[in-house]
Amino acid sequence: MPSIRDRMSAAQNEQLIANELEASEVKVRNYRLMGNAQVAAIKDEGDARVAEVEGLGEHECSCMADVYTAMQTIAEKSAEDCAAQRLEETTGLGEHEEECIGNLYYAVQEVAVKSAGDCAKKRLKEITGLAEVEAECIKEMFTAEQQAKVETAEEMGRLKLRQMRGLGDCEESCIRDMYGAEQEAKTAAIAEAQKALMKEQKQTKEHERKCIAKMWTAEADARVKAVQAESEERRALMREEMKFKMELLREESAARREAVRNETEGSRAESVSVVSRESSRVAGKRKRVL
Image (cartoon, rainbow, N blue to C red):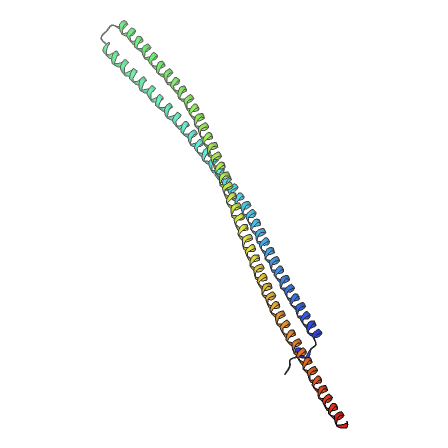
């Protein structure tokens, strides 16, 4: 039983082939548009992820800066409190040391006075047997000597006390300057360490953000290339399919034309044979008539 295409004319077959080619082109165009849409969606998603990572890096950097600023403020306040406490301890130590030195020299003075009195009494007992005048002179002499020793001891005590007070003030000033310089050095060191740490954190976050952005960009490019390769492969397969269909259609058309040609030639040969048979019959009739 002949197929529908065998019953169609050559023009109808050509029109059918043209319609199939147009449908294939439309299908290829739709696949291309679909692939472009997928590529655009992947690129938009990659750009959105990169923007999200960049925004997250900026927010994290701001939070880290706030945290390290707060830590630096706490460290500076702690250093100031420590310095104030050490200064109070030093001031209290100086006052206590001054009081102890004063008590020491007062005790030394009392001991010296008592020792001078005991010595005078002893010497007075030794000279009891002397004459009254000599005893009075010796008594006055030892009294004057005792008074001179007492005054000398008091003067030395006051001088040493003044020296110790001046030394205490100088020591307190030196300690205050030393702890002030130490506090400034610690504050500067903490500030430098915080700056270096913040810089390192910022560089680390920036490098991490760039790496993440590169990773997402590379992933998006890989997905785009994969989609493009898949689209190219589909287009190549469709082209091969269309070529194969075209070849089949051409072969079918050629076969149908050949069949039509053979059928036409057969009908012509049959007509010629009929005419030749009729001609031979007419010729026989003519011979019989003659």
